[in-house]
Length: 209
Image 1 (tube, one colour):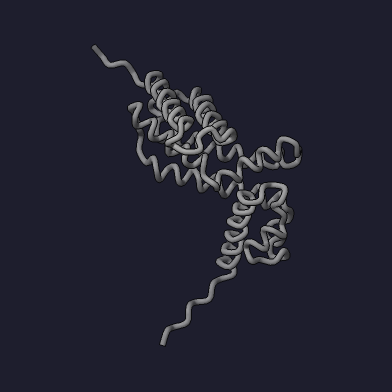
Image 2 (cartoon, rainbow, N blue to C red):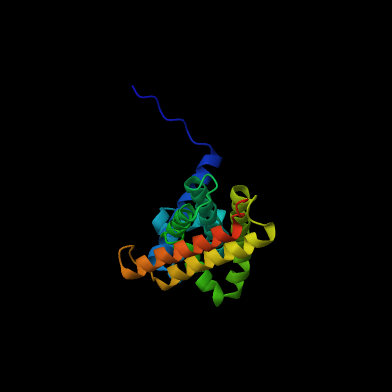
């Protein structure tokens, strides 16, 4: 006879409900877009009542911001799994940028694009997103410092990060890289290598004679 499964604690049930709501919000933002991601749509996707949603998130905006924070944390963790040690040569840096591109182009990251575009004309959302954006920036800077702190001057980490992220976000927004085999894809691959080569040449100390 199979033993009954242990009952989940209230905290475990709470965490499971929140996880379902966050995952459902990501799905709705990707498939429906910002305007159609209502609390009713999220609840239907998650199989959760609206009463349960509002127990954890008092407003739709709170849910959306929490989703952005959740996605940011997961994406930084994914990047760390893919790039777990410093890279130096242009080819290695190109590969690292490719990993970052795969994250930026992922459906999950589409949630950030949806929210940032919406925030352009929504002052309340724009203000509410500031902590999540700062947290993501701090996490990425901390990762860069841990991996390349001995090579990247502290004063240049944020500007360099801005160049890389804005370049990749720009590609994602303009959809210039539909497939790696198409001509735009090959152009992007070359652009990544050129960016990597410039980074390596700037931050690699010259060899001693």
